[in-house]
Length: 119
Image (cartoon, rainbow, N blue to C red; front, top):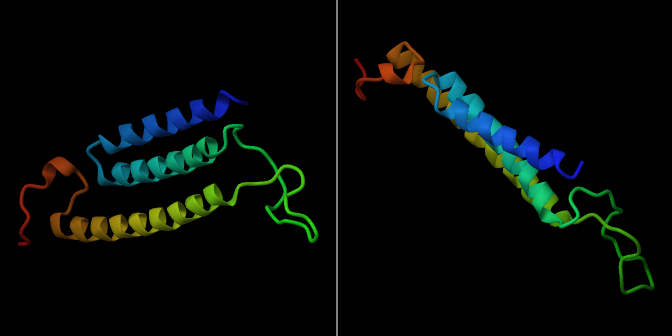
């Protein structure tokens, strides 16, 4: 399990970069999504030196000054949640931009975009 997650992250990054280099706008959008998922998984794995572990909530019991037992780190969870929201906003913007571009140009091939002015 310790080597499986880095391999999956590498595959997601490679597939995302491959899709970004394709000529189709649809594949570009899919590549952006794959890169976002790879980044979120990378934040989770890199956040703790032990990898992904299950733990209790980081709540200090009454009458104690320390957390008892293993605890989950809330910072990577907050970072990934923020990254998911930002990634969704970027995806929505790219989809709207693609729709407008496709309506103006009539194709999704990036090499067919020859002008920046509407006709």
